[in-house]
Image 1 (cartoon, rainbow, N blue to C red):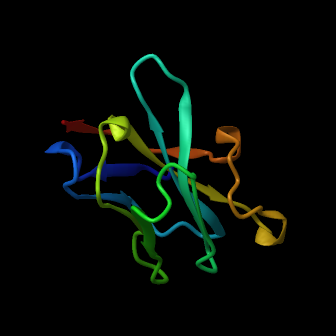
Image 2: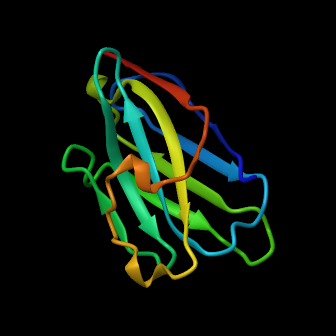
Length: 132
């Protein structure tokens, strides 16, 4: 069973940076895409950024130009996902989750997939708190 573990969250001042990491416990065969979601207190889960197995990336409008998603998917090594977050704002305060999706055939995978139900694997979340 695939397990994802996030790390790198913390408390920072507005304008500062953080880098989140997400590591799988195994190499995910058939990986089509990975994503970062976040959930702020009292709000629903929001898609932040996605990346496909061919490196196509998407970003929520609110983080474009500030966040960068990358991955390390060397064959037969545990998959890794990152989110570099710069110029953090108080509105970025949330629990951040990584998610991953695998399929037999990735040709049907949509870059920017935003349906949480399409991602079978989720991490436990890491808290990011940005203060003014």
